[in-house]
Length: 142
Image (tube, rainbow, N blue to C red; front, side, top):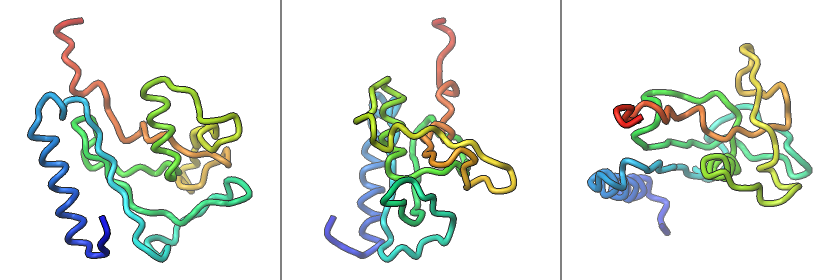
């Protein structure tokens, strides 16, 4: 979308979410990842992990809309754009892109004093902490 008007972006996202939710068969197996670069890197002044030679960017918002998300849950696991790739790879049991790509990094282990700072740095989460895949599972057929 070629616009910097936030209300147009929100309307665009709402149209997509409403259309997917209206299709019950599709909605039952969907997760919509919504993120935006707010332009300028001033969204958040939180911890930025030195992942590799290129480092990592400032934190940006990510909202996941799905019947499998944990309502109201805020993840404290360190994640970046590669987390979307790690989610796809884990969910569909796919290999990583290459032996040296960031999707090979482990999931973060957190310290309660600083939950955003991985103890096992460099590490990037796979976003699975946002989901409860058993909550909509119909156990009557097991």
